Length: 243
Ligand SMILES: [Zn+2]
Image (cartoon, rainbow, N blue to C red):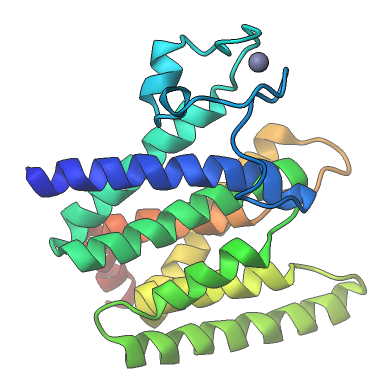
């Protein structure tokens, strides 16, 4: 129980940091300077206005100085990030592994949001996710499978771009493919990518706006997380497919 409480606190703090990163990295601003301030009145925040989740609840989503609305994104990302660390603990049962997996998924969460909002995928967040994904239980195997997936995706990208005569998929998708290969291995990794494509297709049919380019990172991340967290179920499904 103590470990879960610890992971929730770490998850909330990482989520809080990622909120700043989501807001500042796409604009090319520093994540450490200037100190946290209200986005409306620019008033610097006191430390007690900056406690993940609780400050937002305590302030009821409004700035203490100008009463401007504080985006619901802040508590949402913090809560989801804490949940990801708890899921990582449930799945790995080991503190260090839970921290590594939790951080990879929290980074993917922030990358998904940045991709949705700005159609950008900053290396400053995707590369740490890739490196961390190589530090799981079996680093050599993770590295091998991660690189294999990256190579596969790079080939797919080149051939698809050639066939369609336009550039498809970003370099960022290749990095995320590396994370998928490293965390899941070949068979489950392919299942995750298939799942991402299905979720993306459903989203595409729902949105259906002309000229709207669907960001792919949120779907790759969702496919990865679902396959990883429910891997028992995924393995049974794969077993049935291979029969
Ligand atoms: Zn304010």
